[in-house]
Image (cartoon, rainbow, N blue to C red; front, side, top):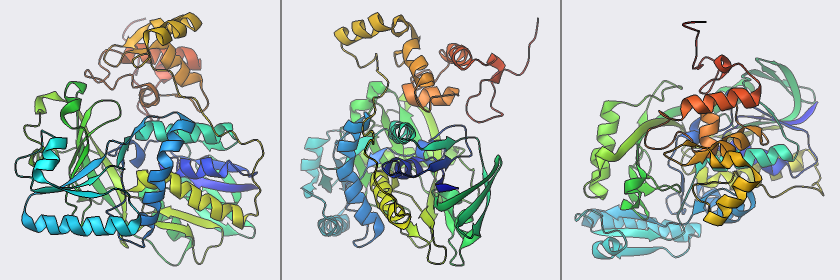
Length: 476
């Protein structure tokens, strides 16, 4: 019998896995997709919120501030990009200034440091491209940006090297209470565990409701985004919000840690739990609303659009902890914004509860650090020469837009919990994330995957099974 099963390998599940790997426990993460970070975690804003928006006393408020504080040290330990760029919340009229003051007061109660309300002119000194209509702004210098892929993958890799198992391409079908814990039925057999962590994103209510009489209801909330080329990445230096509504923090304009510009998301409640399609209406709406914040958004520089789902629970707050009527079943449900910011704190919070429940002891040989994949695009001339001397594949550029080399792609495949799909390589190296959106480098990357994995090239997929690139030969 396992000590703990974690359902879901998004940023929350991987954060819990990493924290549980500090203990002498047998932990297994079960994920229905072909890789970690394939659900909500791959399609969000990448924002590390300061913590002024959450209602004081809620889990969102507590865990946001803690997660924000943890992120910088975690980025050093696990070697993923993180930057405190600071954030601005904009007001466009006198009524909005009163709401900014309310957010300021909330931030003070939540323990957010160094908040300040600026005049419109002071805000434009920080951000010259801001609209002339801006009358005031709440400035939060502790706000930041992070790469959600790199964060999730780093947590997963570190958990893996510390002994956590990962079962990918495996769907959880049912959960039943048994004498000593839970029986988890999957598409690849049955597993027993003393404890279960439910980190299944928009499907978390499905699993919770299998074992608890106190039901949850999660609504998929779709958000659409536009990503702009790096040539206009400097248009915004801070993360720029508008005053929040009941649907969330609204359309933002932000730089990314990789130098792009991101605008989004919209917020529309839908019935489809797989509804990640973009729409002309949604994208048009977010560009109109984004232009309220920043003058002359350069729409000709959009290189891609995408959509993600947020798991909105009707109660409005996170649902985290042991279910009242199901001992050993721990929820991490309703993890919407600021869920990415909270992830390190959620992992810490839940792991402590689970370790206490299972009377677990901490390991003496926990490996706290992880080294990421070297980036030729960011390396100095001296670092490039050293990398090429150690491995000549680092001289062979495969992705021209992002200057990603064959050495980096091979590293992404052969490292712990390495890539097995084109999207897996993309999220680990950025090959295919540039201006041409993989139009040039995909064939070569597919060849490298087949070679390194020892598979036929026709078996290589974009992501999950069924997304193969090649379906047959036209000539022998």
